[in-house]
Amino acid sequence: MLSQLRIDTETWKWWLNERMNNSNASGFFRITTPTFIICPKDFPVISITSIYVEDMSFL
Image (cartoon, rainbow, N blue to C red):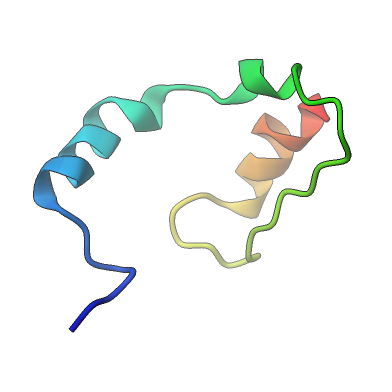
């Protein structure tokens, strides 16, 4: 059975060890069109507070 919650083990290790530590903030300065950040309030990985502080402050 396929699931969006299943992920390749090596991909998950890469995400945890490398990508998760990189900020997306520098890319926000290049956005010149109206942009929405869509996220649930109870997202288990990134808190809504983190999204407001780390992402939306650049918009």
